[in-house]
Length: 233
Figure 1 (cartoon, rainbow, N blue to C red):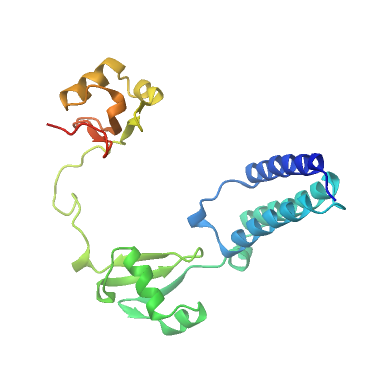
Figure 2: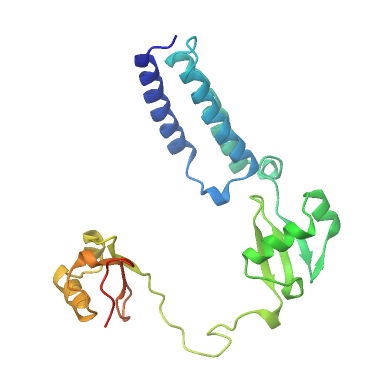
């Protein structure tokens, strides 16, 4: 029978060991995970979970297995960075599934992708008809990248011969009724200015505001709590 103290120490060690491994191996967004990355993450979790409830496996055994597996993953990352030929083997390669408006059946079959699945992936890119697509590339993480035919592409400022404008990032100033002071300071704004802006839009208190977003040269975007916020007059 495993003691509570042993479970506590094993859990604590497993938590910090996984945290360290994550930092060493680098950050990858969930949407960017390859099949190999996904399986590796599952195995790491299984190794910790199984060791926690195995009375014959202590911290030393857990550490050995975790850092052995972590070392293998780290070595794999180094190999793929130094030897380009290994990337296709370990990470896979993107595949063109639609070329010049035509589906490539052999490539779809190779990647176990049927027409319904392809249509689903296209709809996620706001493409509701294959006739709109010039090229579609199946990425290594299972997502799809789409290049539309020129007739279906949105015109850009360059296409319309308009002068370029600077791109400005939005900043959250109020979130769930609380002021984000770091963002205020970053934009050289004051709390007094924010409160005045909110008052001008009909909000007497910050706690009435669910979300407020700032963009240079634009009016402050203010969204109230649906159930208790004051609506803009």
